[in-house]
Every structure is written in structure tokens, then in C-alpha cells.
Length: 112
Image 1 (tube, helix red, strand yellow):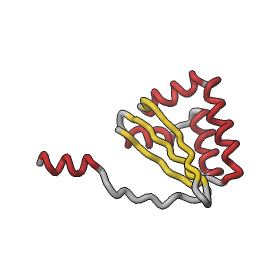
Image 2 (cartoon, helix red, strand yellow; image 1 turned 90 degrees about the vertical axis):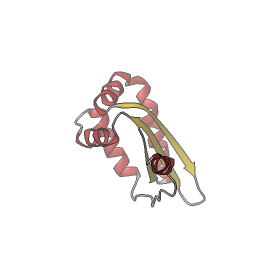
Image 3 (cartoon, one colour; image 1 turned 45 degrees about the horizontal axis):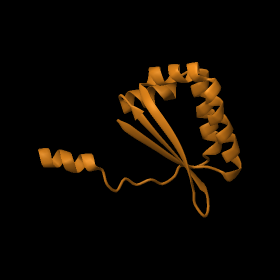
Image 4 (cartoon, rainbow, N blue to C red; image 1 turned 30 degrees about the vertical axis):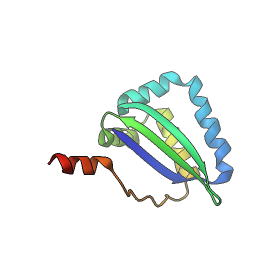
């Protein structure tokens, strides 16, 4: 199942975010453990530049979104604690996100 997280990021914090993500190359074992406990298959981070503020888009493929989210939020793994702290610091306010189309909703209705 895909999960998307969207947040505004302060421009001044973009270098810190890039640096932290780059550090994951040397932390593969920790990253694998985090993904294993959360049921994460893959993640992609996108930085969208708008006229006013950068937007961070995180797309995750999880076995079970509810389980993965709960596991991440309660995780005591150092890599997860660091990311939670970083995310709270660089994302001072949530982006207002509205889902305006979900193909699964229409496909499920057609089958029912």
C-alpha cells in the first residue's frame, strides 16, 4: 500500500534535510532494521520548489500503512528518533492536503 506525507519545509532547513538523507548511505543496516520493523518496502523523497516555500513529499510503500505508521511513531530505533526530531524541526506547519481523486474508490464501487 502506498502512503504519502506532504509538509512545508523552511528553505534554510533544506541543506540539513539533504545531509541527513545522504547520511543514510552509511547507515544501511539501521535503515534495513527500521524498514523491516515498519514493513516498509520502499521510500522516495521529493522536494517541490514553489514560489513561496519548498514542499517535501515522502512516498512510502508499506505492507500495512496503519501498522507501519504506528510502529514508526513508537519506534525507539536511533534512526527513527533522529528522523522524527528532524521532521518536527524542519516542518513547522503541516501542508493543507486535500485528496481529490482516488482510483480505488471508483474501482471498488464498480465491482460492488
